[in-house]
Amino acid sequence: MKKELKDTIIVELGQKLKEYPHFYLVDLTGLNAEKTSDLRRKCFKSEIKLEVVKNTLLQKALEASGVDFSPLYDCLKGNTAVMFTTTANVPAKLLKEYKKEGIPALKAAYAEESIFVGADRLEELAALKSKNELLADVVALLQSPAKNVVSALQSGANTIHGVLKTLGERPE
Image 1 (cartoon, rainbow, N blue to C red):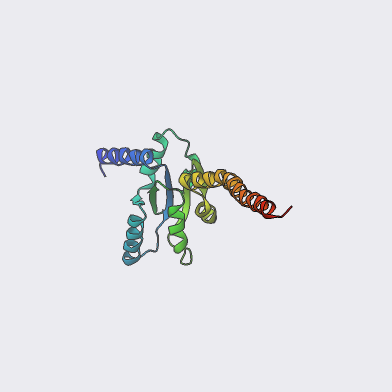
Image 2 (tube, rainbow, N blue to C red; image 1 turned 90 degrees about the horizontal axis):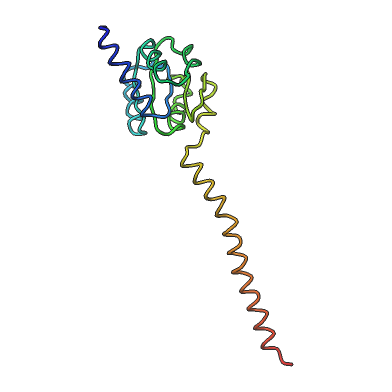
């Protein structure tokens, strides 16, 4: 491969690292053509960009990114594919479907500004909530006390009204 082509690939990988806030490193060794196509289709439907890369080029792109990805460098051995995504937990949920077969295997991930190394971290990654899910949870928690107060006031108004009506109808 010519140096110009390598430089172009490194720059493209660097742009994808900036564009996508989360990425997973996976090992696709052992997938036949049919299963690879199936995985690519599922990735496309889930808005995940799957790309097979050369380890040395990926490492150079990671080094040039300005973020300390050094814990990931040990994972760059053998076949490596990168799953770029905008939602942190989507690739983990997709990889869980394949967990029984063990292929593709998770090598490492960079999600929610944290580095996860090893296939044993898959459950933890799948349980991560996206920023939008966390915001929805916070809004629900904030609305809950307000709903309780409104509900109590409404039921209390009916109770007070019933008591006053009863007292008003009672003969003296």
